[in-house]
Each structure stands twice: as structure tokens, then as C-alpha cells.
Amino acid sequence: MKHFIIAGVLLGSTAVSTHALANADLAKARNCMACHAVANKLVGPSYRDVAAKYAGQKDAEAKLVTKVIKGGAGVWGAIPMPPSPQVSEADAHTLVKWILDQK
Image 1 (cartoon, helix red, strand yellow):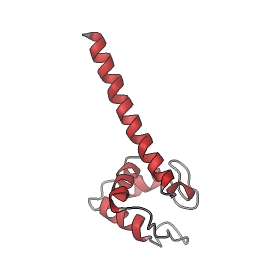
Image 2 (tube, helix red, strand yellow):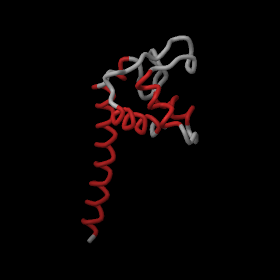
Image 3 (cartoon, one colour):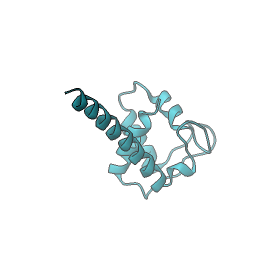
């Protein structure tokens, strides 16, 4: 029984890290990582900074999905975020959920 519990915990943690990795791979595939990183500011803010800024906001996901697809300006300084037509709405939701989980 003990082995089944340990195996279950290990499988669960693998699924979580695989999910997180898959979303990081999606961010790379959609060129998000050209301007953003998880922990450090590049051209745009880090994903951790974005998650902190939007923490607790009910409309954060919808607002950020729109910014991912259409671009935006004025929130993080003078450099605007260009639109990302290569990102589908479904992918934008996946990316934003992952970004908001970065803490």
C-alpha cells in the first residue's frame, strides 16, 4: 500500500511539472520568450511580476488574453507589447493561466 501512495504522489508531481513545462514550451513556440522570462525582466516584464500585479483581480485572465492577442501599452513603461496574431485565443488562455500561476 505504501508503494502505491508514493507512486501516486510521484505521478501527480510529474503531471504538474510536465504541465508547467508544456506551457513554457508553448510560450517559447509562440515567441513570448523573446521579450519575457519567468523571473527576470527582459524587454517586457517577467511573468512573476505580471502574476503579482494581477493577483486577485477577477478579470485578470480576460484582460491579459486580450493584451496577448491585441497588444497593449502604458502598463509596464514606454515599450508597447505588440499584437501576437500567431497566438490563438485558446493558446492565449492557456498561456495566461500559466503566467498567473508564476509566483
